[in-house]
Length: 440
Image (cartoon, rainbow, N blue to C red):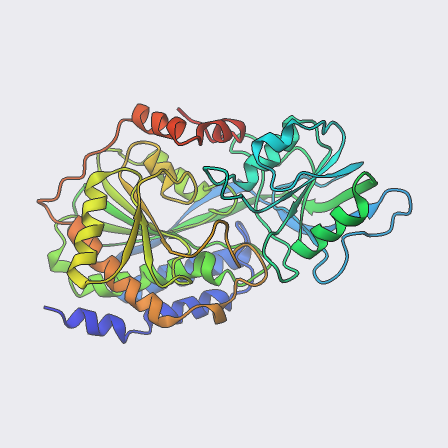
């Protein structure tokens, strides 16, 4: 039966959900907007036919944006000026710090060997191709902290006067140690050209109240203890629509739920859909779910994050051979390109499961270069996405999930020691230990 393919390719359920999410406004973790988006996702899964739709709440450290600035310490005049000026990085502290301004370029590990004691350190969001791994924002932040920097400036490498956002802090200490702001590529270039060696002040005003978030959950298939998790994150940063990151992923799992409802009798194990809350501030929702889960009961995780912007579906399978083979079968079945990768990706909501040795994909859209592109900026808007991509990818992922739910499919787990060793081999362990993400 292939009727479901035509129905999915002409469906508007996922795209309508995406439109609804971006029209909510801010979906910042712990906000009223995030709660509204979770309710919309719960209801969309229910409309698809999934059973027991609910929101599972949890508490978290909240963060609410106020004003921020980079100023000349002598005149007190702003020096990060122009469109959008600068923005505070979520979970940075409400604080003010003054020091000599220094531009560290891309902020790769060797750049932090400079004397940064008491200085205002600026790094780019880029990682050069000469470095064999992506260096995450939070690693750059904590390298600056460890080197004694007084403040942190994160400059976008993407043109368009777009200051980047992204949280700092750790699971144990969710509010970072030094004030942190994002500035556009253009503002960063101007700071480097005009103010290298000058005394600058970075000031951040924010609130950090306790907050409540949640996960939107619903299920299809037989009521088995063993289950698959098909997930996305519902929250987004507060300065954009969050269309790609991650309205697209949440819209996709809604479309997959609609398609799977028509194929429910093909599922041999239960499929649990989860729209996680609070991903952007430290994978809080998925961590709570993974820690509570029976490791042996979760057959696999299919986590969809930032997929529709690129037409080619990318499936990072984290070295689980059975997942790589399943991806190849789907690509062959539809004669459709699917990009795969075997390295560990220690970010997004699959990671709390994968680090326990539970098989998991991170599903995205393949794009050129490193970094987030329009993501984490005010340019992450609906107009950059195409409904065709969403529908095509939902078809591929539906077939993937049905295959993974087959009773005859075996997906071996990995020992956590093996996961840790792979992180060491891939050069990722050092940064994770620095940012508090090393749990091995």
